[in-house]
Image 1: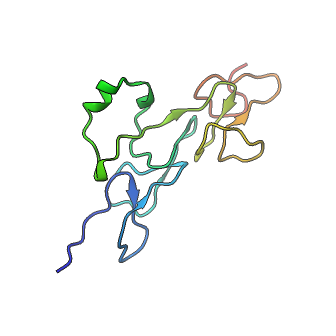
Image 2: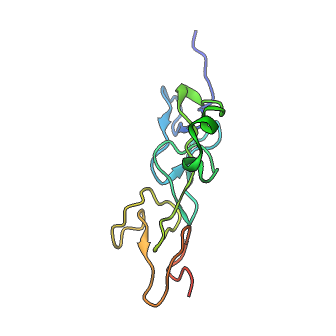
Image 3: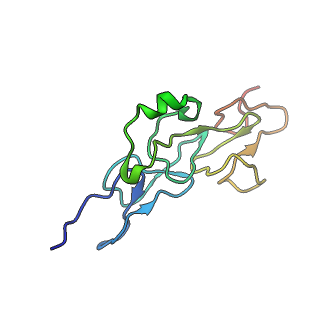
Length: 127
């Protein structure tokens, strides 16, 4: 007898009769159970594979603080949003901190005459 289970946080299940949940891809967030389509990583941030919460700055927590969080499905840890690096801006769906000019799944350099502070989400960060 088989038992169907909701797709867990950190994963998505895009098809009817999915046998195994798929890991949330880079540039996306899988923060709810039962996702068929991952949410887009929000502007001003980048999201690595298995991002499973919209929380920010988890990477800055101490090991003790992280150990106090409840592990998710399969023992994976909470994986949150990372700020877009200083000097760049991130539109929605960015998946890495490394810049490739013209590839908007990566952070992009600010427009001439402007500077972009951490978490910028447009070409003209600040004047």
